[in-house]
Length: 191
Image 1 (cartoon, rainbow, N blue to C red):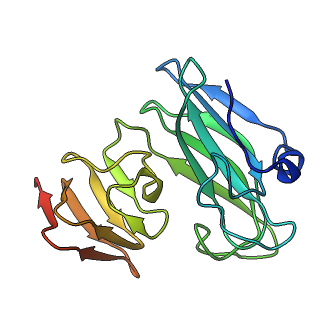
Image 2: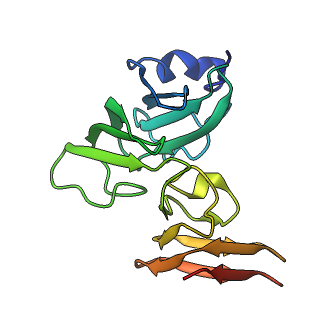
């Protein structure tokens, strides 16, 4: 099993925090830790400030192949300290947050407790975790592209690409969420 965390000079910093893992009921593993990298298998790192970190959550199959990954945080320092699997194949990650930007929507003091729920592929809801394309798994908290049975929560700007048929059961906007349709794009709601 090989997961590329980033360039060599960032590797030791990226793995400096303890990696935590849980096994899901689908014989898969969800691993989390804190990272300072934006290359390799890491996408979505939120800051370039020295010393800033994000939660990094990865899901691996029983052979060690990467299923999905998420970098969660803001411009400051976020450190994951605990992880729990959920029945739908997702997880709950707990730790600390110093940011009030990016995925961290509010900060009540210098360092706050921060708990994040990532839904699994059998979930019934998907929430945007960043601006992006509808058909990119890195846009969604659920780790998959929304399907016709998912309730979709739009908290960011999402673009449905050219000639793409996006699907959802229901669409709920939360400011500043926005949906942009490219040429020939459409959204099919099943409710």
